Length: 441
Ligand code: S3P
Image 1 (cartoon, protein in one colour):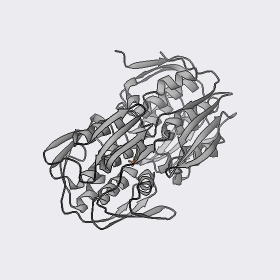
Image 2 (cartoon, protein in one colour):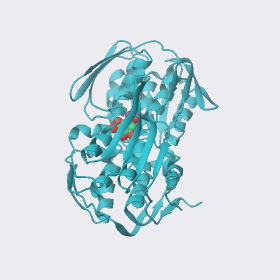
Image 3 (tube, protein in one colour):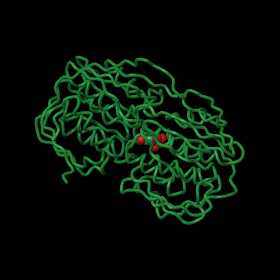
Image 4 (cartoon, helix red, strand yellow):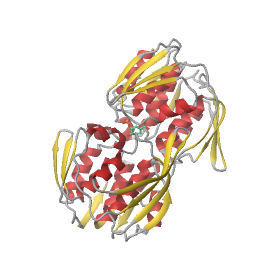
């Protein structure tokens, strides 16, 4: 079967109302926490992408049953000691860094060795960023290098730790928070700002958590507990999936979109703050709080032109998965844009910083790079004419989707390989883009 798409023409103006599928970070956290609760949890609007389905497969391999009933998933949690870990097991985290790193926190007390493996891209990523703090709780790890496969040997004698999270990584912070849940005493975390879904879920579940927010850091105290109850939760739409539609709308003349029921948690809306500073027209409507998370409808209208930005570093973590499309917007903006300290982008499913710079240069855009700082000389009249072939990008779902948005908004004749990469986070992506009128073959 062919595993590429062709885009040969720009999209025409559109005016649509859409929804996007459930948030990936929240979906994975909900499944993992439901596996640790006592009783039957019900999760609605769970994202049915490979990362989340792999999460379900992993908990099921460790003895937790689940079932899809109509529109929701029921997960039959057996409590904090409910994982059956009394024999050697191997679980597969596929492409998901979030799954692999967070589940390691939950395996901190596993009675036997559990080996985590992943696909090619995940296996290359650095796991020492989580194994280092998890070792301090008392767990041991066996691995040949920094990546996967990795074997965890849990401990029955856990001790709480003090942990200073300096990367701004929610995966590292959450992995330690999950381990802290199972560890008697109080674990103290000082964490650089990053998405706070785990904190909000802990509060929602009445898990003892103390939070003090400072300007650049959060102090988080977690008290180990013996159990918590099952829950019911509806996952809001994923702003990272929305980001492709937001940028497509801004870059397509006379267009408008409303994206309903999106998670607009401030630790995730960096893209909107950045684009607004670039003269974008974006409004959050019907703001409400649902189970601790902010949810809104997002209204976007195209503007005559976007302007360049000197992007404040404080937005880096809340826009971390969106820089590929932000760079596209900067390429078509009037003026120069500067972005700082984006080294973490090269630690994702592919080296995204390197890739984005290469692509923008192919467009004829001047891009300067100084270590992890990038300067993009925007061209508001940017129109592409040549042929663009996108392949060998480690099947990074966000690279695929960013390339589609570039093709639809800037023109040119595109052939984009590895269509199946979107299954990771947004299986409906192409169908949704087609509802706006995109011509994809
Ligand atoms: C995620 C955190 C981010 C993000 C990833 C999802 C999470 O990674 O890039 O897509 O759900 O915690 P880091 O924590 O490595 O920055």
